Length: 379
Image (spheres, rainbow, N blue to C red):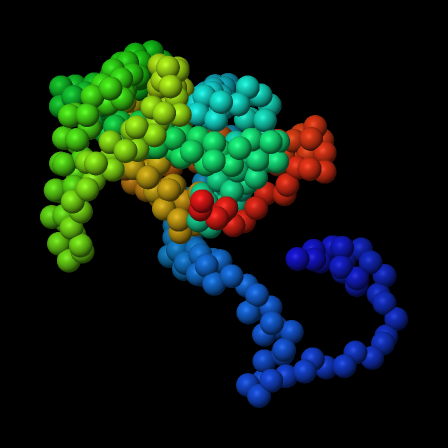
């Protein structure tokens, strides 16, 4: 694709001397043959993805414009809160790097960090970009000599472990919802104590799931029954517990004896990001229960995984404002906290990904591949 600023005759260029150019040939239907060829070369999957993204943005655009119109209000938040949120997000990313370093058995923190930041930026710029982001990191690792099979298995194990922690958070929040729970009070102390409690429960539950089949099989059975009752017209699942066991075994194989290091990384990745949301709420003066905010956070994280818009743009913001409202946060505070949180957690890592890729290219030279837009073929 040629950018207008660099194309002949584009902005900043002298106008070329007049010359005769023949009109493009047309087929019987009247479509220029060059355009027709371009449409044929465009992958159908990308056409569908961008089409769905356009439709999704069309429906959320009015609410998104109204939400972003409140951006000037962020100037009322003390800048130290943004520093705190930035530190929390940086620590969250560092946990993600630590987890990938274990599953990929890659000693270089530089390679892990630049590949993860690059793939993260790609996934947030392209609709349905999770696959494209995964492909970018896959190519960056394999270009440095990593075995393709190890990269695929390691990235899969990272995703499975991270998703397992995320899906466990609502269950761990239920006791606090039923029997009280800390509020985001004058300081973050009570909320941080709650977060540490959840962190400890994640470690305990993760250790049980890694070394005992029965709890994991029981969870799979409950989820399978619920799914089959909700979607009666679809083919019923009958192997979900066995699939969970197989995926757990993959994680154990990739981690070996270092599983006890991986669990804190996986838990820290989500809980530090969640704490950044608590900081955004505290910055606006909101005092909701931390357990209810955790539920709202999980809902927003799941919306971010829906491959409709890049990084769930629009759906996450609107969904987070709505769920924070259900958690007892006022509309003005929920809007302001969502904007502050997404500014630090979603928008700021995108230019960081561009810087990371430039650093990767400078260190490793021409062998560094460009971020890809298609996933590698399955082995």
